[in-house]
Amino acid sequence: MSTADPVIAALRTGHDGLQEVVVGLSDVDLAGPSGATDWDIAQVLSHLGSGAEINLATLEAALGRRAAPDGDFNPSVWDRWNAMSRREQADGFLASSLALTELYESIDDTTRDAMRIDMGFLPEPVDLATAGRLRLSELTLHSWDVRVGIDGSDNALPADAADALLHGAPNMLAWISKPERLNGRSAVIEVTTSGTDSRFALHLNTPVSIDFDVPAEPDGTLALPAEAWLRLVAGRLPQAHTPPQVTATGAADVDLLRSVFPGY
Image (cartoon, rainbow, N blue to C red):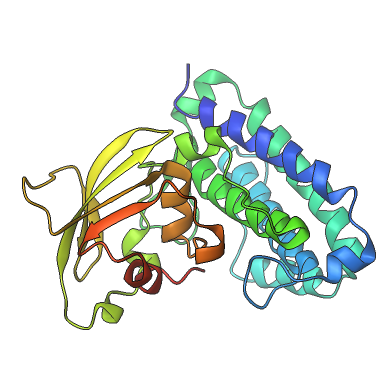
């Protein structure tokens, strides 16, 4: 079994789940607000669709099926998708996301473990599981944006995606956090997740980081479902969508954490 297998399986679940939603959306739905600030639902789907197209080209290059995309490739893809109508963006997402998912699924076990992918923005090529997690994170969180925009309910992230993403490389916490919003404060928070069970230390400092060296007397504690932790650090745990299982003590101020992790 390849380490990429659970990630690829979660990509399929995520694609199929969002496809079920998208095929039923009206033009009014597509123009409506999403869970992503300043983006309507069609724009979220455009982001996912263009991202799938870029990921597809990157993966095909790693497989030796095409030349590596040059520096003009990504902007040209974004420009084309931005010029589409909302309906074209929705339909385009369905096609490009499916093509990327099927390409991941088509890679044999030996290649899954051996191949390395130059993502273009990371310091070195990564394995297939890492590349897949980057796509899975994007797909999972933006699927949440679409669902929340449509029905406003507390849609938890899928369990298989949460399991694949929790502690999975690459660790982007330093990149997505805003330690300057701590205003000079620092703390070590004991974090305990359920669903996907884990216990780790969140270091509120510069840079923000996590490790598994939990102190005997942390400055605070935070207990929450794993999927809620992933939404918290991605800026998607507003009060209205915070499950009742989230509990915090001491320096683990949830409003402060929301500020430190404003989203992207």
